[in-house]
Length: 331
Image (cartoon, rainbow, N blue to C red; front, side, top):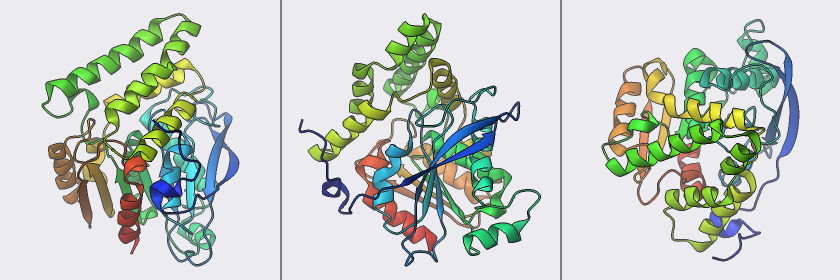
């Protein structure tokens, strides 16, 4: 396999964008103690200023790097990409468990601190003044889709829309009817739970194993493009183990396998875009269609796009196509 390309335009067709890091302090969802959280900001270019900004939530074990190709494919689009507590440059919560509800609370604190949506006390006018009147679009990939949907269900009128890539449409441990898929889920569950029971250093080493990280990427990858394959493996090796400590990873894993977008589907009273892979190990096509129908009971507009020849790594393997769907969703 060749080394990862330094020029990612060979994958996306767009030049790479460079975000700036914003370090905020947010309250711990349980104790209220201040804790830092990193947000990576891609500014607009003026020409795209009329478009709503995007708040993007990355997936399990990820950080802002995982959505970099997608940001590259949306040139000029303003994007805010918070790194979830315990991952990337954001330390773990000091007191709260790392659950879907607590992660959603953290993202809400971020967007309120940035003035992207109104706080309970400021009202809508304050947010409209800070964003030029454009409500943001909330985007989530994989586990981020669960967090984003749980946030949106509580404040649907504060968002222009909800865009979910590889949405978790069903509990991970019962995904589809495939015995192989269920077996894979059981193996993953055993891996994380066994690591949690090991002595500290050993457990951390097992969770950070480059071999396990490589196997995970190999199982999920569907692309035949050597540059894309080299890039995603390089990304996983460099950033998939950038978690704060073992406890946060195990807690986040448990949250990622017990929650789904389906849990809150009938509360998503806003436009919703679902972009799924036909070969996604973590969400069957049947499950995605069921999710779209459930959302459609209350949403004014729900769109489901199934991309052939790709699984759970749309953000790497089909970033230009996903970006085009998001761009059309904004119109």
